[in-house]
Amino acid sequence: MEQRLTELWYRERAPPSLLTPLAWLYGALMRARRRAYVSGWLRTERAGKPVVVVGNLTLGGTGKTPLTIWLARRLIAEGLKVGIVSRGYGRRGAGPRAVQSTSDWRQVGDEPLILARRTACPTIVARDRVAGARALVAGGADVILADDGLQHLRLGRDCEIVVIDGARGLGNGRVLPAGPLREPLGRLPQPDAVVVNGAPEHGSLGAASRTSPALEMRLVAQEALRLDGQEPPRALHGFCGQRVHAVAGIGNPARFFRELRAHGIEVIEHAFADHHRFAAPELAFADRLPVLMTEKDAVKCVAFADPRLWYVPVAAQFGAREAHELLARVLAKVRPTGAGGQT
Image (cartoon, rainbow, N blue to C red; front, top):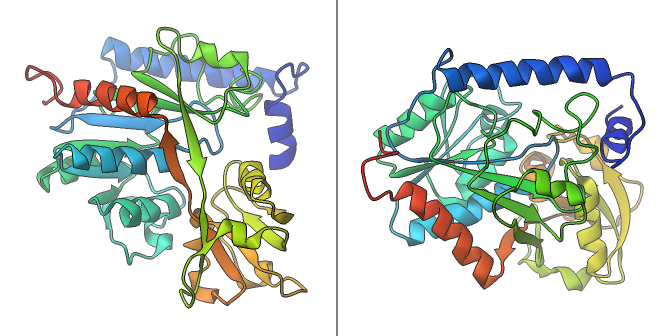
């Protein structure tokens, strides 16, 4: 079902769908919700320090987690104490919980665990992201990065960054469930920055960035790490010409498979649903070929690591001009000249 919906969503000219009436209803509810916040009928609450939201307009992976890592490191280099708040999709429990590098992914979620490990920033998961952000501020954070909080309107924000997959764009431009959009585009405020992951291939991107050009980002993979930690990292080109099983339980598995093929690797694809909870038998293939997986999948497979299993971390990369422009836009909001945005 997920595969069929994805194929429908990412046709630029999809035919009329039986899901269209449900999409109209969903879109009307989302527009009413946003109007309620704009009018003050529903209350937006501040965390006490500037909040930068990194999110996406569509379901599925766009690269927001690597971008959040990149931005956290840049802000730290600017002398700011960064805290990260996330819902912690699929975790057990709902209350605020601090994420440690040794946390169980079942308790905190897969992406927050990666964020905490890769940035060393205080990280909190909470369904109530206002409470999570305030806990980070109480702990001394100067700025809060909200991972995937674009539609969490109760959390007041000073800066919004929208991340779009360049290959997929905004799909057919329809809202759920007839399309991939989380909310209608027409009434959205202009974000502070639109970041496109990979070369943009769709004219529909203009609907998300009306006043300034989108900034292009690439996700770069250079090495694989053995899951059991018993070998040093291995350059991806070391797998060139070799057949491997490629495992991806992310929003856009095809992107991971393309990246491996770009390094000359012969890929046997195994796509799973986003945030899939892996079990050892699912990786017990009949041969002894290496298994390459994403970092997001790896945190859920450590318990049954063996010498076949490797994971491939990715890093966000910008050109010098784009990196400078994005950081400047964010700093302009988190270091305001007056007191605005700090309350």
